[in-house]
Length: 411
Image 1 (cartoon, rainbow, N blue to C red):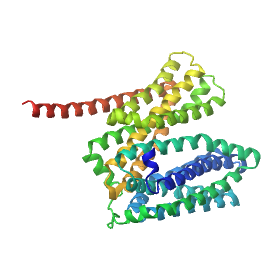
Image 2: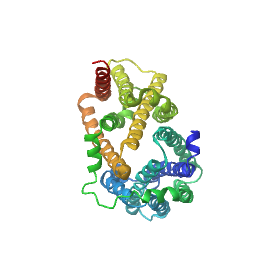
Image 3: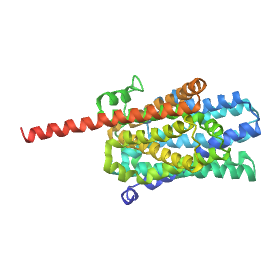
Image 4: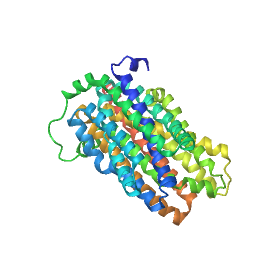
């Protein structure tokens, strides 16, 4: 942590990230509150709005990542924050539901430019050891705001009205812009590395890295499998809790406990990464699968699951998910070519979004055929098997390297 504090511009980037994260969660919570309670939208409109909010990342994310590599990332951050603030104001004054939904789409597009630009600046500022500490810090910030920002949104909605929170979101975007001038020197240094040519295909650098870099490939497969498994079971969780006789408030408790587990994982990540290294994403995937497999198996066997066990499992679930995701984030930063960090990060995020889009469709079909508990059993089993296979492959590679070194020393 101390070493990060001494990095020029890092505090400014962290402050901007804090304001950005709070604004994102305020937007997410308040947009759908407004759709339900102010515009009285039906389920189809809300579903369409959700798709319009998330799908731009799948379609435009890789393009904006490539653009960040070829242009000034600091300018992309300014434009993204400014677009977020303007769309928040426009959402407040939207005269009808149709325009509101269109602005939700624009808000989703405005959110895209920040992530690859931040990744580029982080790579330019930090060395490999500092990247591990940065992953812990940024994840802790994100999870803390994930807990607090929805509570703030609920308070603003109760005391005033949902649109009030969008005004706060717009103000936070402007605060984020004020943090960025301190990063000008980093951006100027990055400008000397910018790619001048236009990539023929925005997924090309990601696929090349997957083919040629074993460590990156293992971490990417783990996080993509993790995301796909999450998409299978997560939309069914509230119905699963209802079938198990849990009150409605338990779902919100589980969301908070999951975020708390991820926060705990962020605090322990530096130590665990130093101890287990490239085994961590695979081990996290196995642990994640067990937290999903166990409640599904108990429910399928007719065993009642007490509330403390539910909460403990989802603390572990959030921790395991966070460890795998952070491991991939560090691997991406360390192994990506410096001139293509934005392109690779955005393309990887787009691939994860694709898994999140397809997973719920498959999970819903499976729930209709097998029942929700067996969806959890199958999802957890797939995660455990996938993680175990990747652990075996990683360990096998390590043994091979050690064996080769030993034979060279002792022929």
